[in-house]
Length: 180
Image 1 (cartoon, rainbow, N blue to C red):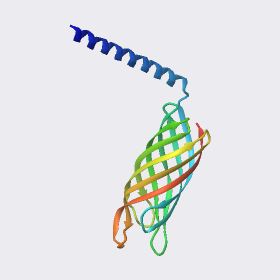
Image 2: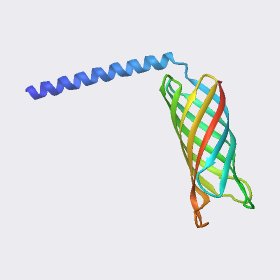
Image 3: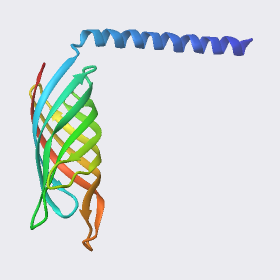
Image 4: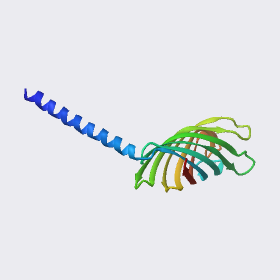
């Protein structure tokens, strides 16, 4: 009998705590002005693999704020991987969805994105899986972030000039954004 009373008491306490948390979360969400933001950015980066020397690009990002701290993102644009010498540059269009979480004073954030990179220049037409974690700092208008991007299927050269796949990129993004 004591076991039934103890389990019943624990279950009741857990139910009350959960109900209180749900009501509190709903009240906080109601007070927060959910909505869309649009941002335009420029990107510069250093590829981690040969034969690429530099990456430059521009993007547009639409963001939907779920709460004051969590947002969903959709990013696209155009970037170009420059190659020195006679080799062809690699231009591509990224298309990524992401999740952004603000971790400090609603300005410092972590974000993860996943999507595809569509090669569009110089006869190279392969599409690559694109994974991109980043860390950034955002104000009401400006956003600066540092990210790593991994292109699963774009060609690289190793130290023996053998062509493989799996290109990495470290990039800096400067952006201007506003509420829609």
